[in-house]
Length: 334
Image (tube, rainbow, N blue to C red; front, top):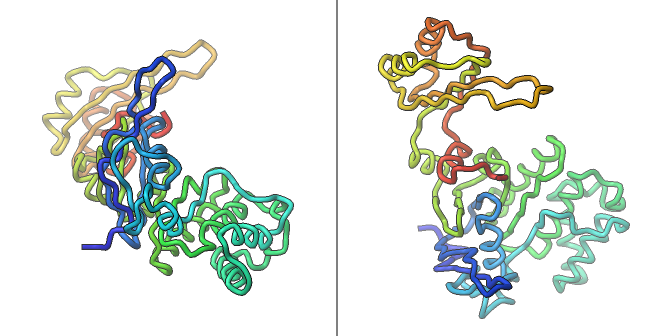
C-alpha cells in the first residue's frame, strides 16, 4: 500500500447566509492522496472543489472533519503541515519590475531561507524551470508561459513534499503549455513529489494523473484512475453524425438498434433555433456503440438507405470528459 501524503476524513464546510440559513459547500469528503502521485481534482464551478482544497491547504477552517499533510493536522499542527506544502496559484503572483532571480530570492526569504541555502535553491529552481539564461531579466518582459514557470519555481523553492497547482496552464500558448505539463511530470518522475492538480482541461488531467477525484454538490462522486472511471460508467464509443436540418425517422432508429452489433443508445438533437441572421446549425444523430469504428460502416449504410445525407462523422472514444459529463450532467465550466 503506498504511503499517504494527504489524508482527508469527513471534511465538511457550512456557510451561514445573512438571512440565517445555511449552505453546505462540502458534505463530508474522504480522500487519500499518495506520496509521489499526480492527483487531479475536478468539478464544475460551484461544486465545492475550491472550498475542499482551501481546507486541505489551511486557508479555511473546516466545520467538521479533518485533513493532514504528511501526518500533520492542518488545523492543530498548521505550521508543520504548511512547511510540506508548495502552492502555485492560478493568478501570477510575482513582482513585474524584479528579475526572475530577484523574485525567487524575495520569496525564498519569505520562506525563511538565506545565505548559501537560498542561492543553492534558487539556482536549482532556475535550472529545473529552464530559466537560467533569463534569470537577470525583469519578469515584465517575459511571456505568459515564462511567468507561469517563475510562478512554479516560487512554489518549489523550499523543496515541499506536496505541491498544489491551480490551473497552471491558463492563458498560455500551446508550446508553453506543453513545457509546463512536462515540468509537472518531471516533478513526479525526478523529484518523487506529490502534486495536487486542478484544471478545466480534461485532456491535461487524463495525461498527467495517476488518479482523479470528481467533486460535485460538495461530495466526492468518483475516485480512481482514468481507466477505472471509464470502466465505471461504460466503455461505449460515441459516434456523432451531423445531418444538416434533417430529422431521423423512428424506423431508422429501430434498425440501428436491431441490426448494428453493440449499439446501445440512439440520441437525436435537432438544430437549435436561430435569430434569422445566423447560419443554421446541424442536426446531430449520436449513437453509443461498443467498438464504434467497426460498427460505423453498417451505421452509414442504414442512414444512407433512409436518404439522410451525412455531412460529417466524429468518433469519440471513451475518455475522461465523457466520464465527467455522464457523472455530473454538465460541462466543467457550466
